[in-house]
Image 1 (cartoon, rainbow over the protein chains, first blue to last red):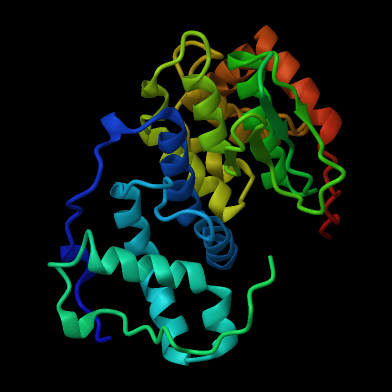
Image 2 (cartoon, each protein chain N blue to C red; image 1 turned 90 degrees about the vertical axis):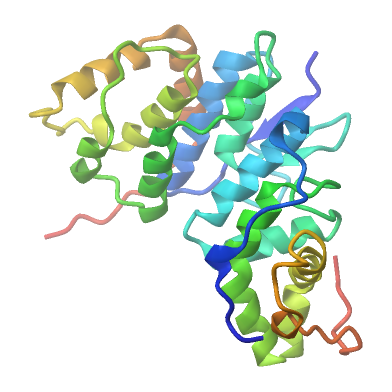
Length: 130
Length: 176
């Protein structure tokens, strides 16, 4: 995963704010605010817990928040993957699953295939205790 | 009766007070039937809004206030618009620097309005600085005047009262 220019990515194929419910707009607001809160470890833990039961940032629809949070957390996620440490990967497993989804759906045509995350889905991770 | 419940941030530092003030005032203004309470059964210290009917949850103060506003009787999705002052206020909270240096960053509002979300956020963020008894208002008389007018609004009095009874700040050590 070599570094491509995140600033050149454009948010496409996302659901417009006008089509979101109050609950979805509140979730979008929440995660955008938390991503800029200056507490990256706490944010990663909260986001990972949330994505355990949710496909996208507002639940079931891709929105501009998936795009902005993808950009905000990409560098940290790259460092987790580079470690290949099972405990670190396990700790962020839901974020990594979500990054893989975003890369291969709403950002699919914008990131060269050789620069996408190479997640090893066969890696043995400790069982998740909820 | 509302199916919403709001649990306060049980931390003992200033950012917890600021977050609690936002949601305490937000609830008093937009949904007075929803009371801020401390969830002492839970090990988590973070604030939470829960809809008992749907299970919907929020854990961030700005989003909670906007959701309470949007779902209030006169509410609309406009509540979710971001005012530029919010970014300044979020940055103050992020840096956790609650002293006079933050005062020039916030321009006074022309009129105190409890239904203004930026004013609720500004009041909560400035509260730890502007309520210090030793505070001198030199150069910030307009800001203090707006702050005092906002503090005197009935919903704000109620919100602040609920929060101060739930938030117990750790006293910081005196510096020599």
